[in-house]
Amino acid sequence: MAICLETEQEIKILKVLDDQDIFSAGCARVCLNCTKQILEIVGYDNENPDNYILKLACGAGGLKQTQAEIKCFLEHKYAPLAKILAYGRYIEIMERVDVCDYSDMADDYDEDCSFADYLESNDEEYSDDEKCRMAEQAWEAIGILTRVFGYTADNGQLGINSQGKVVAYDYGYQAHVEFSQVSDLTEYVSNNIDTFYVYINGLIGILRQEDITLSKFEDVLITGNGALSFIKYFIVGVNHPWDNTPADYNTLYWDSSSSLNSISLYKDSYEAYVIFQASFYEGKFYSYQVIDQSICIDNVLTDEELKNRIVTKFKSLLP
Image 1 (cartoon, one colour):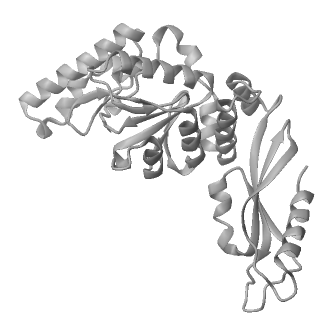
Image 2: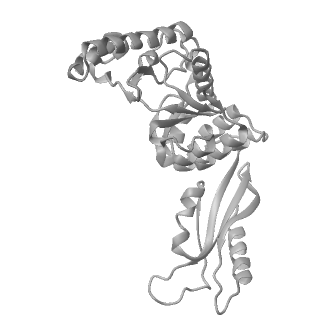
Image 3: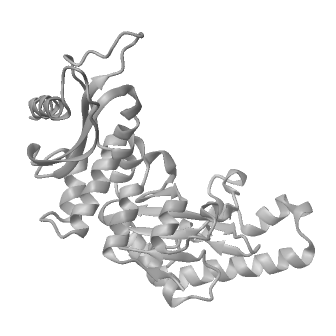
């Protein structure tokens, strides 16, 4: 049975998403590799993360696809559909399938090609009985999606799950509302690390009922116009010396990123550091908090003296 995530669970999952885990992008959603940490948040500690993927809705179009896909799965639990392990408002955790890729057999596989062609091209892998069973499952999956959503090319996106069953793995695209289920935001989220993390932090803000809607947020990210609340991370501190001389505590260095994971990678290059989480609204700074630090005591500077200098340096970087 699919688990409906609590808001705090979904927020925790969003916080640990890594842009490096994106392996596919559709017209309104991106797919990421699942991780053990994500499954632990869901409560499936013993599951293998390699058996699952995570789908992230991009913009209002992605949200509509996700909602439609979840509804279809819950109402057709015994249909040949890829199983949804858990879902929130903007994410789904779905079983991973081996995609039946027959798109290279025809320019327009949904019209000029069929699942039968896929089976024929893999003739030696399956017995006649297996091919008959798989074909029946394929037609059933396509038939259900066509009845529920109308005919679209997405209905032919089939894969084979870990039990050897043919299932539809992308079944949230509705024929009668196609254009409202796409989003240009997908390209920005999948191809730009800063936009990815700004988007993730924006979704967290929306889930926490901050004063911004998904449609407005999507428009801001694409057009660059309007109000936008987001979070950025800064690390400020004393760098390790390049040679064996003592670290120069009189000189402070800094780096910034929209990703906490990315900024944390810099920690080993600092002799002493403080990581700040800064919040912005309409491009202007309005609050910060210290979320990590490693202040070394030096013969000249005490911890508190160095920290005060680092905080002063951090504030000087803010717009």
